[in-house]
Length: 206
Length: 206
DNA sequence: TTGGTCACTTACCATATGGTAGACAGATCT
DNA sequence: AGATCTGTCTACCATATGGTAAGTGACCAA
Image 1 (cartoon, rainbow over the protein chains, first blue to last red):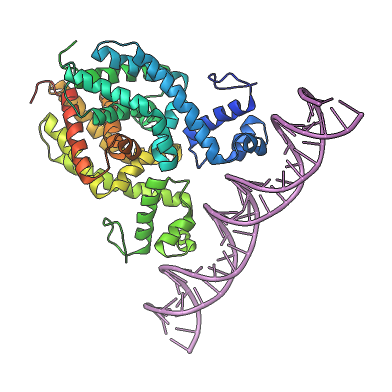
Image 2 (cartoon, rainbow over the protein chains, first blue to last red; image 1 turned 30 degrees about the horizontal axis):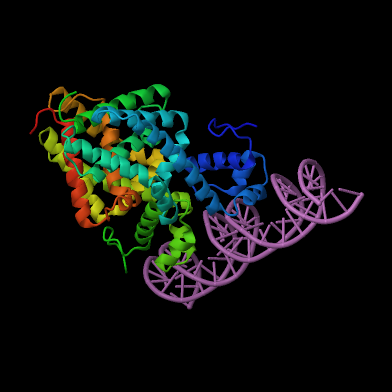
């Protein structure tokens, strides 16, 4: 009943397990998440988890797959509203921030993926591959048409990705910088990053 | 005898333990690192580790402290060679990349810190606080003098940090983008990021 | 020689973890 | 009604983990 998340409103047990696992994996990390504590949070016995997901690794894979789909849908959606170069980039960044506001765990998981070795990370990246390709091609096209400064598209993508994820998930550092992770701060960070990206990417001042 | 690292050439046991712990914490993560496996790699019994560092957490703290010092020294050094705005930024970025080439684990640890909760992360950030302050003030001064576009200094710092760390540590994503993490690639990434930063920061094209 | 400290070891231990085996209640099917 | 299937639970278990207690040999001062 208490979904606590808001995304998968399903009361179904496997969905609830996935929700809880996503949150815990994203915040405490995969290894640091025990099936027992997960089960306790769900007011369910550990065996119930193992009934739906035969092993912890399978559970991780399931979380990855579901998250990759959600992420893809959200971003593909904002990529679909085709626009001129910068508008498009801005739309994507905004939708990522929207996602971060609604489901911070999702972004946290993305971050965690980079740390988890080849089995998990590979699966995740593979699932997002079409998205990456599309974004990469988009950037290249924009450069060709002169809307954006020329860069190595894939490296540029990595840079943008790193900046956005960092600005969204480096909570500790934020705190140390005197920036409490509030909703207001999120807006400021968004403004800042958009400003930076525009300066870095766009050729002529729009 | 086999220091395997190159930095702390000391053959002293505690130093070797710190070296191994740093590498393992940075690559496999703190929780995923067991004292046993650590000891095995050092051809030493686990108790030897616990003799020098009474608990795993103390070991982590020690690794953090030593790494923070190394990091500070490296960056303070490149900050010391005072120069005009952009030259200064470039020098720092270059020294981070140099550090990444010589001691990738150090950067890996930085990344890991963001994930580890308040006890560890706070300690780390606190140790680097003077560096952060200095960098922040530098940026502000540069903006005041008109050498750089105006931004929120602390957020700008976070953005730069995120980008650099990301470009240096997102190995999986790099691979997925067809960029093998070689030395050659490192140079390309450095060029790319410097290019990006210059576009984003500098007011007049140097 | 002896007593003590240092660096490290062997011997254990309590606990937590992922996972197996099988029971049990309720729903569904025949 | 009886058989079967579904979802969850209780009962265990092997292993790994961080950590304690106590020993051992080398060295060193008195």
